[in-house]
Length: 213
Image 1: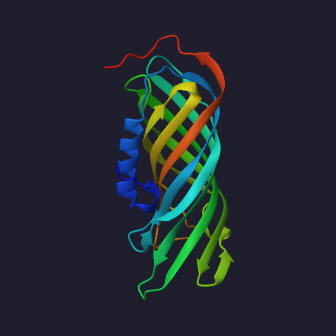
Image 2 (image 1 turned 45 degrees about the vertical axis):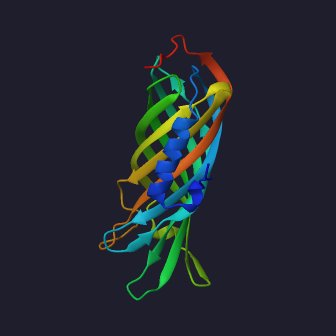
Image 3 (image 1 turned 180 degrees about the horizontal axis):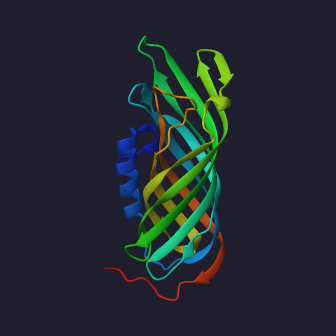
């Protein structure tokens, strides 16, 4: 079988390939509430109708705490640190990029279609820690030019496997412009991420085992 590297593909193709990977590796085991660590790779950009932006690779790491609400529902708050950003192409052909470091607090509701495969959606709040713009060899700290708080929505897929391992694929769409004192560009954050997590602390077993349909 041909090897697929989702990190070198275009974002839409990477999302499709990762989705097939998640479904193909699914196993049917009841999961527990707990505390865990997660990390992964992401592609992000600042989408604007005026500026031409391109996806920039990044990464994230942090903690998550899935809370079981029944046989098919979980709520999962997370605390993540993410390296994000965007590439820009000017009308004169010039190129620049912005790198940001943010603290993210997503809260997702997960609905299980079987014992492990789940659909998830929720909200995410981000707090900007650092922003740096690079054009050629010049780098500038541009943190003051950006809003400190970002807000938007997440949609994704997940596999909660046996022995505490979780895999996830998620897309984020920001709803608030990221620039301060902006009356022209109004860029908003977008990101696609693929993550792996491990529930290091298992709090309790689900009383009802999810059935496969």
